[in-house]
Length: 247
Image (cartoon, rainbow, N blue to C red; front, side):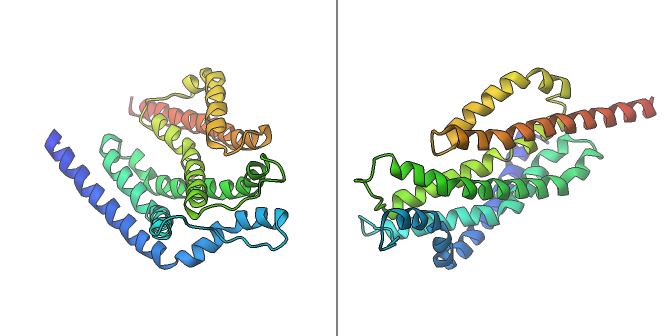
């Protein structure tokens, strides 16, 4: 296709992605009270440890803050619910550059992308309660948490999204190996640098500075990197066998 045809196709796929996110956002807006009760749970656990009343309500400082928080939560819900459409449209946009046999990986690509994104968000919720407890206790017993809705929800959503995106690492690496940009040998040779990079990303993504949380983030990323090497090796073997059969 010409450049204009590529741009026209990209526009069409972006429209479909936007519609999926908008529909998901409408659903997220409708179920906001239920979502908020889940999102506020880590904060309630912290408040119960430092406050006998156990009052874990969030405060607002501006008239539009409550509406802004609701929109943020709805948008994240819409992005998650629209994830299958987003990953499918992404695959459809890049699949013309793949061979016929490689295009068969469309369903695994969409399924694994959505699954790993959800797994990353779930892992964030494994880390967040302890992380929030550590962060709110750094000031000592005379400083107790009384957070605003805007600050707390932004912190929770940003951390969850960051973990979800980081967990897409194996999908990205596997796709790059599928199209021939990366090889198993190259990834094995780059392993020391990759581990350093993973450590830096883990330090940036994790909300606390303690080494335990950082190691909890590094462990799955390192495993994902090794799994990606295995997939790259498998793809290369399949290509070699196909080339030998055609010869």
